[in-house]
Image 1 (cartoon, rainbow, N blue to C red):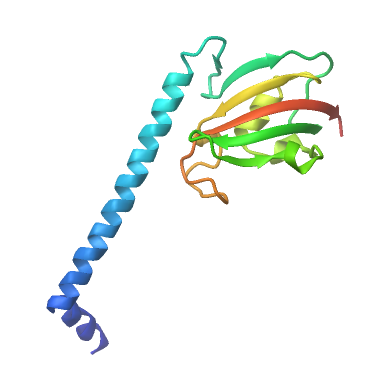
Image 2: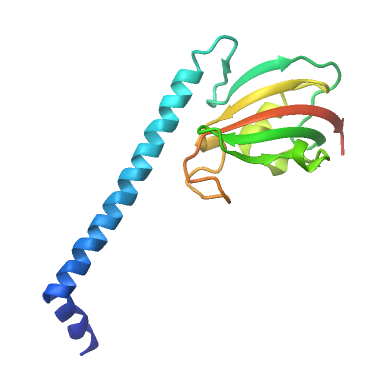
Length: 163
């Protein structure tokens, strides 16, 4: 009996308006996501053409802003670094400089793009990484970061400690 009530709702004029609004809502979300994905792909393509940008086999893009000396970390290393993380629209989502203290953590515990990129760095280096969504948070939302977002990190490696 309850199922009949639900189906009758969709047969009414009010029910049909609801279905149309629901369809419009889902269509709008799908179009917005498709547009965002297109903007991210376009950004990656344009950035890959910038002088001194290197694109790895995984799609990570990086620029060496300053070369350092010393050891390079592995994914099992504890690293201390400063970084600024932003989205392609320039919106900063994290900034360790503003917090006044560089974080230390095991490198293998962060997104794949940073694991890969920071392993290229020596202590004292400063790199700019452009991380495609597949190497970032993928189709998941992470705080202010929307699904399928390309991320930009400027990273300064301060210390490496082998565990």
